[in-house]
Image (cartoon, rainbow, N blue to C red):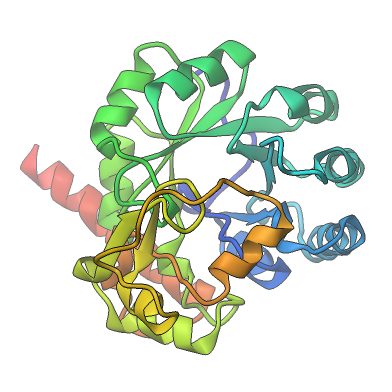
Length: 307
């Protein structure tokens, strides 16, 4: 890699930003547990609320905690981007991950205070554009990811990106245990993006019924469709049915919209990744990270014994 990662972490895991699910509580708990905690800025209704969230996070964290991460939507429909970027410059999140658009609008600001810029990418074409823009890292969203999902195998994606990029690679898509984390690192990733495993935690802002649906579901209970947001996303069939949609006939893509108005589409229609079957109970972030560490160390030991 071009440089050593500047932040100490207990495990190479990012608690992924989840729309309408991640709040300051989840970010802080993740960082306190020794991993990175990320949230999407559209989870706040106004820039003033975003200012308050960022202040709460920075006040709660200590130098030994994991890094916190701001996820910015850089698509043209995000009319708040300029205002939110001013708050990024003020609060200085260690890492900024851009999504659904080019990372170029944030580069000068984040690089100016010494932060790292990662780009959320779902294809090799987008990964090459991100590399050309000079990002420090990429979040490679692969097949099996929850919410807006990718289509490439995680292993194929990592291998292909490593051909032209020597920065940090975070990979997401169906990874929900420590063995998956170890496998991704062995394949060439530096970190794993993990959302669904943290969705039903005590610190998550997901509705109680949503958390229980995660506990009760497995990968067969998912459907990928662009009919809800205009971009392919992985949805829980039961939530689609409960909202009056037929999971087997969702129709064509909806009009794309990544503004605050899109929250209405996500409030009662719930997303999950293919790692959904791993969750056994609603528990704290600290308990999840403890389990991940045990599984990670066991996977490393198994690998050593086999080789």
